[in-house]
Amino acid sequence: MQDMTIDGFDTRILNLLLENSQIPRLELAEKVGLSSSQCFRRLKRLEDIGVIDHYATVINKDKAGLGVAATIMVQYRKSEASSRDKTIELIQHTPEIYECYSITGEYDFMLRVNCKTMKEFNTLLNHTLQVSFVSGLHSYMLLACFKDKQSLVL
Image 1 (tube, rainbow, N blue to C red):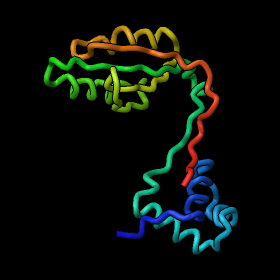
Image 2 (tube, one colour; image 1 turned 90 degrees about the vertical axis):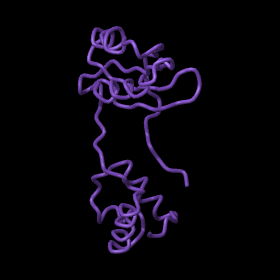
Image 3 (cartoon, rainbow, N blue to C red; image 1 turned 180 degrees about the vertical axis):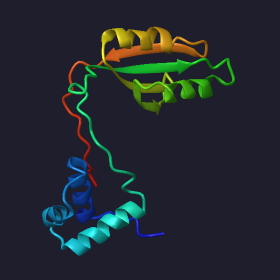
């Protein structure tokens, strides 16, 4: 296995890629302060050891017509043996749900959802998620985002 040590150069590479994963590689090397070959070797190493899992596109949800954003807390029915698995399967197959976290506390999952309209959100909350193996739901409408940026502090 390759060295897992992340240093300041690696952190700068990662932060620049988080800002723009399509940054030209020569520009990346210049901004990091390394030769292109040194920078490319580090980038390849970060990919090979799995620090860089994949590259993605960030979509402006408002401009894409997904103006209704919410967090939904979900509790599955503990008395039914397969309810956790059924809940996860439902979540996996519901396109409005784009993130799901297993959490501690009163609820079991935290969902991040985007819908086109309030009617679509209402259908998600009051029909799609109203199943026998879900025992509790609580939703929070997301009104404004003040920070939505990934960066590393290493």
